[in-house]
Length: 282
Image 1 (cartoon, rainbow, N blue to C red):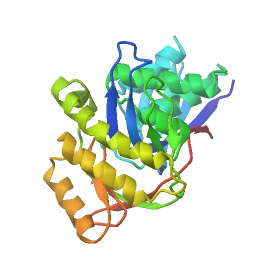
Image 2 (cartoon, helix red, strand yellow):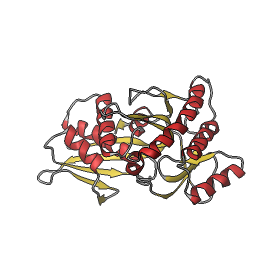
Image 3 (spheres, rainbow, N blue to C red):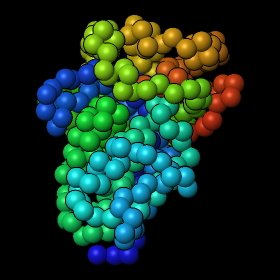
């Protein structure tokens, strides 16, 4: 046991997703396409005697049910201060709920000397995300790191890496939040998403067998999915995608947020990069 423990989990851009529904949260997950980026969440955890479980997000107290749910499940009765730091925006499609839960879980495990495996900690973070309706597939990507496709139903942590160069530049802009909970709870929207995803997954399956994959190709698949699923509706998102495409680049909507990612800079965008860095102790 130590006085303080830290862990890092990367942000994740989801470009395509299909909902794999199941009554058991450990079996409900998503298939699709995702990219972990160089920025992420750093969790610093200390014991918090007499004050229960408290969560700070960039220095501000926050009600964060996913992180609190993970902490109480992982360490029943423990009193913990969980300090989460990130430069990425919350509820904008960067998978910060999953990254926060995953980083917090690793740090709690280290702090209390619980001895859980990486797989066990990732599965717990995934289950809590599903229960809270905050995500279905980010934890899988953050567990592995890189440009990943998930093609096999039944295993929430199964993924294949596409051979996209590590460190390739990406650009993004966040406009406003989309509540993942609202999308996942709507059966009509879920059906439309899954129908569009089946087409995209067939294309992604072909990419998985290629020796080299261009980032733009993956984003173009995501762009078609965003359009066909009905998720691409925000005017500023549509306008930004058009700007990039008119400049010869590829751009799509980040799932699930009113946000854009692209191969080229565009008005108001910020730079990031693909990273193969996965969740880790610091």
